[in-house]
Image (cartoon, rainbow, N blue to C red; front, side, top):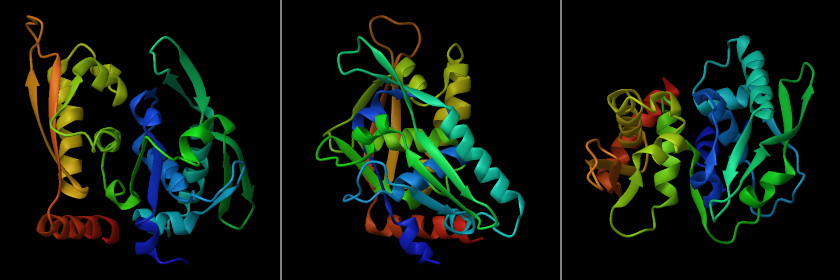
Amino acid sequence: MKNLEAQRNYYVVKGNELIQKSRFSLPVQQMKVLLYLISKIQPTDEAGKLYTIEVNEFCRVCGIDFSNGQNYIDIKGAIKSIADKSIWMTSPDGKTETLLRWIDRAIIEKNSGSISIRFHEDMFPYLLDLQERYTQYKLVNILPMRSKYGIRLYELLKSFENLEGAIVMSIDELKKRMDCDKYASRFPDFRRYALDKAIDDINQYSDLSVSYRLTKENNSRAYNKIVFYVYRVNRAEAIKRNQNRDRKLNG
């Protein structure tokens, strides 16, 4: 068994386009399975490599009760769901969308508790051999998060992290990127059940401190823009958040 702390500090690396221009819907646990798999990719890996999950190892890394026999079934089901789902990628000029799939193949070694997967070849440009326009963060920053919205917003803000000043987004576009279409017509519900919960997750567990301001532009009667203020946490705050993560993951 590899050191848990070392595995939790593996980097998740994605092309910015995959974060900023894609639309997909996965529950929080499936997102963590997927990001755990992505964290296993090394810079020297070649396309087509099989990545293996040891179910007990995954549970320990993610702070899940690995003595529960249901976990193998749950993770097996999660990988099937990820493989069955696809994502829409918008082209840089915004004129086309392409359907991509995460997983090409999954292999189970019976009675071993291990599952091996291979990413789909269409994903290679966004996960392997990234030289520029990519985002990386430590897996541990998202493992304790309670909602998929926190993970999605964290990735999105990290992908803009090197920009100076505030990050301005359309609220409608933000809802799409956070998989919040069900709140399309009810901004108060979006703010209460998705946005504020995401901000709370980020500010409690991650390496970013985030606040926001809502604005009305173009003579709109309703809020239509959001301005995020994003900062890296200082040393004292980083220690506090490390403790928060440890309590959440280690029980």
